[in-house]
Image (cartoon, rainbow, N blue to C red):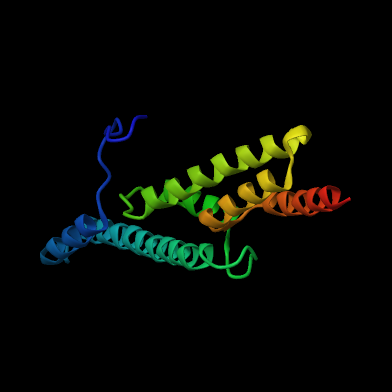
Length: 163
Protein backbone atom coordinates (compact mmCIF):
# COMPACT_ATOMS: atom_id res chain seq x y z
CA UNK A 1 0.00 0.00 0.00
CA UNK A 2 1.44 3.33 -0.99
CA UNK A 3 1.73 6.19 1.43
CA UNK A 4 -1.20 8.56 1.30
CA UNK A 5 -3.66 5.97 -0.02
CA UNK A 6 -6.75 5.20 2.02
CA UNK A 7 -7.30 1.61 3.13
CA UNK A 8 -10.16 -0.30 1.54
CA UNK A 9 -13.23 -0.98 3.66
CA UNK A 10 -15.15 0.97 6.25
CA UNK A 11 -13.46 3.74 8.18
CA UNK A 12 -12.99 2.88 11.85
CA UNK A 13 -14.59 5.23 14.37
CA UNK A 14 -12.27 7.32 16.50
CA UNK A 15 -12.18 7.46 20.28
CA UNK A 16 -13.84 10.88 20.03
CA UNK A 17 -16.64 9.42 17.85
CA UNK A 18 -17.41 6.82 20.54
CA UNK A 19 -17.32 9.44 23.29
CA UNK A 20 -19.81 11.60 21.36
CA UNK A 21 -22.07 8.62 20.66
CA UNK A 22 -22.11 7.69 24.34
CA UNK A 23 -22.93 11.28 25.31
CA UNK A 24 -25.80 11.39 22.81
CA UNK A 25 -27.10 8.03 24.06
CA UNK A 26 -27.57 9.35 27.60
CA UNK A 27 -31.06 10.56 26.68
CA UNK A 28 -32.09 6.93 25.98
CA UNK A 29 -30.80 5.47 29.24
CA UNK A 30 -34.01 3.48 29.95
CA UNK A 31 -34.01 1.47 26.76
CA UNK A 32 -32.47 -1.98 27.39
CA UNK A 33 -30.87 -2.40 23.96
CA UNK A 34 -29.33 1.07 24.09
CA UNK A 35 -27.98 0.24 27.54
CA UNK A 36 -26.25 -2.88 26.16
CA UNK A 37 -24.81 -0.94 23.22
CA UNK A 38 -23.60 1.79 25.55
CA UNK A 39 -21.89 -0.83 27.76
CA UNK A 40 -20.17 -2.33 24.71
CA UNK A 41 -19.09 1.11 23.51
CA UNK A 42 -17.75 1.97 26.96
CA UNK A 43 -15.68 -1.25 27.02
CA UNK A 44 -14.33 -0.52 23.54
CA UNK A 45 -13.58 3.03 24.56
CA UNK A 46 -11.74 1.88 27.69
CA UNK A 47 -9.73 -0.65 25.66
CA UNK A 48 -8.85 2.00 23.08
CA UNK A 49 -7.87 4.58 25.69
CA UNK A 50 -5.76 2.02 27.58
CA UNK A 51 -4.08 1.01 24.30
CA UNK A 52 -3.35 4.64 23.43
CA UNK A 53 -1.85 5.20 26.89
CA UNK A 54 0.43 2.15 26.48
CA UNK A 55 1.42 3.14 22.95
CA UNK A 56 2.22 6.71 23.95
CA UNK A 57 4.23 5.42 26.92
CA UNK A 58 6.25 3.06 24.72
CA UNK A 59 6.83 5.73 22.10
CA UNK A 60 7.93 8.25 24.74
CA UNK A 61 10.28 5.70 26.32
CA UNK A 62 11.72 4.95 22.89
CA UNK A 63 12.30 8.65 22.20
CA UNK A 64 14.13 9.11 25.52
CA UNK A 65 16.27 5.96 25.34
CA UNK A 66 17.29 6.05 21.70
CA UNK A 67 19.41 9.13 22.31
CA UNK A 68 21.15 7.53 25.28
CA UNK A 69 23.90 4.94 25.25
CA UNK A 70 23.67 1.65 23.45
CA UNK A 71 22.62 -0.19 26.60
CA UNK A 72 19.18 -1.73 26.74
CA UNK A 73 18.31 -0.19 30.12
CA UNK A 74 14.81 1.25 30.01
CA UNK A 75 14.25 0.31 26.38
CA UNK A 76 11.09 -1.23 25.03
CA UNK A 77 11.53 -4.61 23.39
CA UNK A 78 10.56 -5.27 19.82
CA UNK A 79 8.35 -8.13 21.06
CA UNK A 80 6.44 -5.78 23.35
CA UNK A 81 5.75 -3.39 20.49
CA UNK A 82 4.65 -6.29 18.25
CA UNK A 83 2.24 -7.48 20.95
CA UNK A 84 0.91 -3.95 21.29
CA UNK A 85 0.20 -3.85 17.55
CA UNK A 86 -1.56 -7.23 17.69
CA UNK A 87 -3.89 -5.94 20.44
CA UNK A 88 -5.40 -3.49 17.93
CA UNK A 89 -7.21 -6.31 16.12
CA UNK A 90 -9.77 -6.68 18.92
CA UNK A 91 -10.28 -2.96 19.58
CA UNK A 92 -11.74 -2.10 16.16
CA UNK A 93 -11.46 1.65 16.59
CA UNK A 94 -9.19 4.15 14.90
CA UNK A 95 -6.12 4.54 17.13
CA UNK A 96 -4.15 7.74 16.70
CA UNK A 97 -0.82 6.19 17.77
CA UNK A 98 -1.09 3.07 15.59
CA UNK A 99 0.66 4.67 12.60
CA UNK A 100 3.62 5.67 14.80
CA UNK A 101 3.83 2.17 16.29
CA UNK A 102 3.75 0.59 12.83
CA UNK A 103 6.40 3.02 11.59
CA UNK A 104 8.75 2.04 14.43
CA UNK A 105 8.11 -1.64 13.72
CA UNK A 106 8.91 -1.14 10.03
CA UNK A 107 12.18 0.62 10.95
CA UNK A 108 13.06 -2.19 13.33
CA UNK A 109 12.29 -4.93 10.81
CA UNK A 110 14.37 -3.16 8.14
CA UNK A 111 17.26 -2.82 10.62
CA UNK A 112 16.98 -6.50 11.56
CA UNK A 113 17.23 -7.48 7.89
CA UNK A 114 20.29 -5.26 7.45
CA UNK A 115 21.94 -6.63 10.60
CA UNK A 116 21.24 -10.21 9.46
CA UNK A 117 22.76 -9.48 6.04
CA UNK A 118 25.91 -7.97 7.59
CA UNK A 119 26.28 -10.83 10.08
CA UNK A 120 25.80 -13.42 7.34
CA UNK A 121 28.41 -11.75 5.09
CA UNK A 122 31.65 -12.43 6.95
CA UNK A 123 33.83 -10.84 4.25
CA UNK A 124 32.27 -7.39 4.84
CA UNK A 125 32.26 -7.68 8.62
CA UNK A 126 34.72 -4.92 9.53
CA UNK A 127 34.50 -3.09 12.81
CA UNK A 128 33.53 0.11 10.97
CA UNK A 129 30.58 -1.58 9.22
CA UNK A 130 29.44 -3.28 12.41
CA UNK A 131 29.78 -0.08 14.45
CA UNK A 132 27.64 1.75 11.88
CA UNK A 133 24.96 -0.96 12.00
CA UNK A 134 25.01 -0.90 15.81
CA UNK A 135 24.66 2.90 15.84
CA UNK A 136 21.61 2.62 13.58
CA UNK A 137 19.96 0.40 16.19
CA UNK A 138 20.34 3.25 18.71
CA UNK A 139 18.26 5.48 16.44
CA UNK A 140 15.45 2.91 16.52
CA UNK A 141 15.70 2.65 20.30
CA UNK A 142 14.25 -0.83 20.81
CA UNK A 143 15.67 -3.99 22.34
CA UNK A 144 16.19 -6.48 19.51
CA UNK A 145 17.97 -9.85 19.62
CA UNK A 146 20.30 -8.89 16.78
CA UNK A 147 21.82 -6.06 18.83
CA UNK A 148 23.63 -8.55 21.05
CA UNK A 149 24.86 -10.46 17.99
CA UNK A 150 26.15 -7.31 16.29
CA UNK A 151 27.79 -6.17 19.55
CA UNK A 152 29.57 -9.51 19.90
CA UNK A 153 30.64 -9.50 16.24
CA UNK A 154 31.93 -5.93 16.65
CA UNK A 155 34.07 -6.91 19.65
CA UNK A 156 35.45 -9.88 17.70
CA UNK A 157 36.17 -7.74 14.63
CA UNK A 158 38.01 -5.15 16.72
CA UNK A 159 40.06 -7.90 18.37
CA UNK A 160 40.94 -9.39 14.94
CA UNK A 161 41.90 -5.96 13.58
CA UNK A 162 44.24 -5.37 16.52
CA UNK A 163 45.99 -8.71 16.03
